[in-house]
Length: 157
Image 1: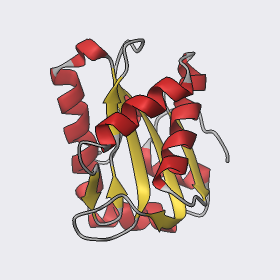
Image 2: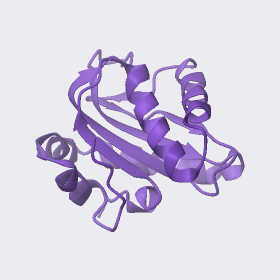
Image 3: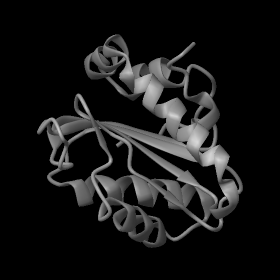
Image 4: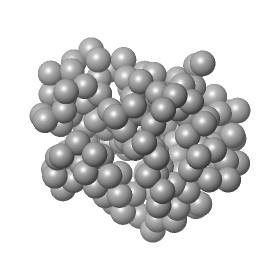
């Protein structure tokens, strides 16, 4: 399935649906959840992602953002997803607030693997049907079934 992000979420997290007031709050929630899962300080993840955000928006339009960073202590690329009840500002080129956020983390040495993972996530969220289904999903289990049909740890928020 083109929208199956199981390979990135097998060691990742899915949060949502929930409310957030800012981009930093969303990034902090995902950084903390991924940090806890991998025994990495969530603040280190947050700082790396913010450093990347400061280079330019990670919004890809249509209410989707793919914040990403390299994290030294990881062994392989990993993702975290959150769906918000209402979008937050990610300085999107289309001006739209983002409500579908996929955080991608990769080891420093990932190189091409990081780029392939980023392309995989981007392709998945390019589908209007996929975005619509995620927004209509009533709970975290329904989101999990759409985004990662294989076994994934689900973190209810």
